[in-house]
Length: 356
Image (cartoon, rainbow, N blue to C red):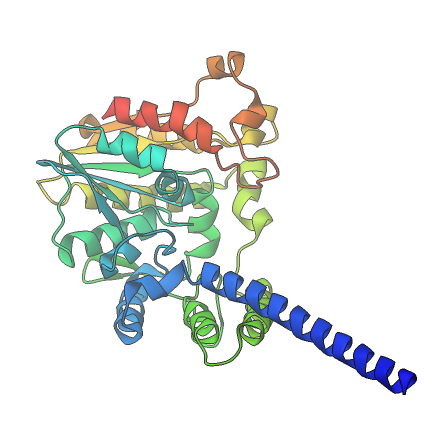
């Protein structure tokens, strides 16, 4: 009897332990799922409406903004975010370097501190002049925003993006540049259908633990497709040109693309000024990169008929190195040399605002 009683006790303890473990796992999974649902398309409401909006706009814009920490249900936030009030309107374009300006509330507060000015924040990861031109067309025609001043953050990666990522996807339709998405069935690096697939898994009617497992499996599949996609341009493709210089044909191609962007900026008489912003990468300071897009932009401006309306700003000054260390400028181990948050707030963005 004692032995049977002990067995029952052990079974009860085992059952209790398993049940408690399952509850802990489910609680953990619940929190992880809810955390993931803080971001992405769920903030934008009706899934069909969001899907239609994305499918319509990626036909000309290749990919849209990453919808992260955007406190709005306005679909336009997938292309740009509007902050501030005033008679003066300034559009900020660029790749992730421009997109990073939105990630820190200190930067938002700094922009809001510019009197009588409304900012359109359109920075989108891996955008370059072709996509910035297509984006500008959408902002003007689709949303009726006609900025007086445009700030274009031109990153060193824009050269590789134009020559590798978008060259075979860009086209001119009715006099307007478009950049097509990758072909169906060939998921590219920025295909947004994966976002909806993840959303469906996270909101399905199954236990949270199962949702999280399915989410992680799906995410691994997506990453694998990204790595094997024939449309994906890797680190060496994008940044190799900075190490090895640029051919004459590629330089001519870039010059045409950038001239096209400048001409589009001033195609509407309301837009009076263009502020171009560049910055070296970490490997420029070490001497590993021999090509600097700042030098190329100087030449592009000199040849432009709108040169009197264009200002070039490079917020980096070698004297800064007397005050801060290089690790305080660039994010450590970041191959694309994105800037530290404090450097953006204390040096980079103030220089841009000062130039305005």
